[in-house]
Amino acid sequence: MKEKINQLKEEVAALTASSLEEVEQLRIKYLSKKGLITLAFNDFRTVPAEQKREMGQLLNELKNAATEKINRLKENLQYSSDEYSDIDLFRTPAPVTLGTRHPLSIVKNDIISIFSRLGFTVAEGPEIEDDWHVFSSLNFADDHPARDMQDTFFIFRHPDVLLRTHTSSVQSRVMEHTQPPIRIICPGRVYRNEAISARAHCFFHQVEALYVDKNVSFADLKQTLLYFAREMFGPETNIRLRPSYFPFTEPSAEMDISCNLCGGKGCSFCKHTGWVEILGCGMVDPNVLEACGIDSKVYSGFALGMGVERITNLKYQVKDLRMFSENDRRFLEQFESAR
Ligand code: DAH
Image (tube, rainbow, N blue to C red):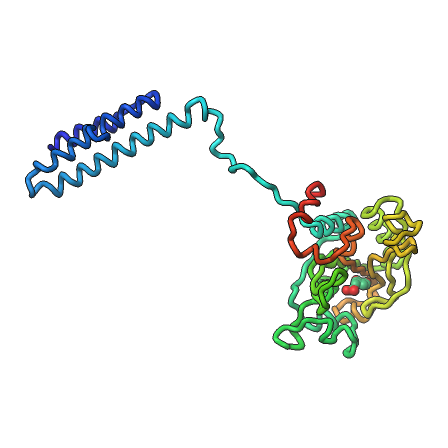
């Protein structure tokens, strides 16, 4: 019996087939009800009791080897037959639906790319911040309303652990450990304790820019702003600056661009003024430079900050801020071509 099993085992190992029909013949020959291996199992009854254990094991091995061999022959033939000859087994299964970039990422990357052409490099900072970097180092007086619980999310009710309310915090982080020249752009998410509506959200995105060096002037700021506006909204775009107030800049300004929908003629989008506001800016207040360890008698700088949602709305006319965080595919798929 043992010999017979071994002989069958050798036979099975050497099996070949050149068509699926041949494989089927082999299956019938060895594994069908009257196949050689099945018959060998029938002989098992006659094996003396003390050999049953060994023979049983050998028979099972033989059967497994034969089944596996026949399956392998079949698979090889199936995938090399004409029908499958051009199958690429390494291809990702279809259908492959490609994702689209989020509109905020598209616009953020556009902003970064415009400023990087002017030599700015990206700097990032933590979203969970402390009072010093978000407020005190940026010249916010102790009783400034922006520190109020209504605007700022505090963590663990701790007055010194908070979610940053603006990316200006990255300015002070970078200035603390870098001496000028500094030319950075800081994109990131910010948080404010606001009721969620079409026009406000409790988190949104900003990009901050900071340039500190010897002899940086308001003219440098203006030219940078004009370059940015024209790269972002087209070469016909005009800008205007209105005096404003921010604790960390002096003088401060807000910048409007000529309405990119009506070209400045006046429409409902720009409330018939021909202008829309897009960012805040100014010359870095000497107090901020000093608080961060930079000599304000030697260096000066400008800073600007803008909301990414705001710029995206202007470019793509998204009417409701909530669309940006709802992940509705019908909304997101509209930006496929902008990828
Ligand atoms: N941090 C300001 C905000 O969140 C935006 C801003 C205004 C940033 C003026 C600046 C700036 O760097 O100079 O509203």
